[in-house]
Amino acid sequence: MAFVLLFSTFSFSVEKHFCGTHLVDTAIFSKVEKCGMEMNSKASVKKKCCKDEVEVVKGQDELKLNTFDDLNFNSQSILVAHTYSYTNFFESLPKRIIPHKDYSPPNLVYDIQVLDAVYLI
Image 1 (cartoon, rainbow, N blue to C red):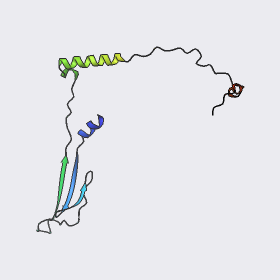
Image 2 (image 1 turned 180 degrees about the vertical axis):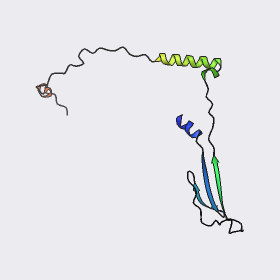
Image 3 (image 1 turned 135 degrees about the vertical axis):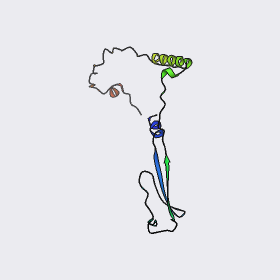
Image 4 (image 1 turned 30 degrees about the vertical axis):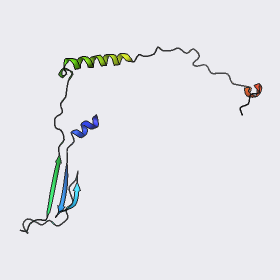
């Protein structure tokens, strides 16, 4: 949900440089590179062959924050009932006492498989 909120409020611009009808460069977060064919406005009276396009993708400026009081009575009662039942659904288990939790078993001196003549094949 945080990413949806971030990208819905995110705005950026896409800049494109055309030389004639050919796309020369596209930039999102930086300036476009020019093709070098554009002329100074003082020196030329001819029609310019290059053009720049800027598309601005605007994000959402205002966010609507709903509160619990904005909901109608039926929605409020369903929300309260669901929250109450969900929190009481999980009950913790009673703490079990294990009397021999710290007991370590004795060391085996004999190989029991050899003594009982039980071999796994």
